Image (cartoon, rainbow, N blue to C red):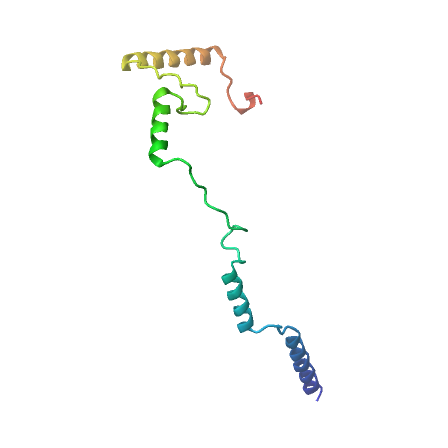
Length: 127
């Protein structure tokens, strides 16, 4: 008998809880409101909050192209980095010169290592 009363109380509480979550508008009402708002243009589309006019150019494309070509020809448009400085030219050393420079670096490193000028191990690294 206690189980029956408990089950009845449980069913009654669930029905009351479901009625508390009932919505005020029907699906048809919500769809009608959405359709009217879309027709009026009050619904924002995408990530923007307000419609914006597209940017319009005051010059023709051909005029812009000729102006840009003229500026590039006179050097008014910087190339490369924004600083306007030209990068240093790469050395045009021959393969023999490159091999001689590498041998010199290797000999210098070996001499420094032999003299103890190059520290060894992690303990010798200073920060």
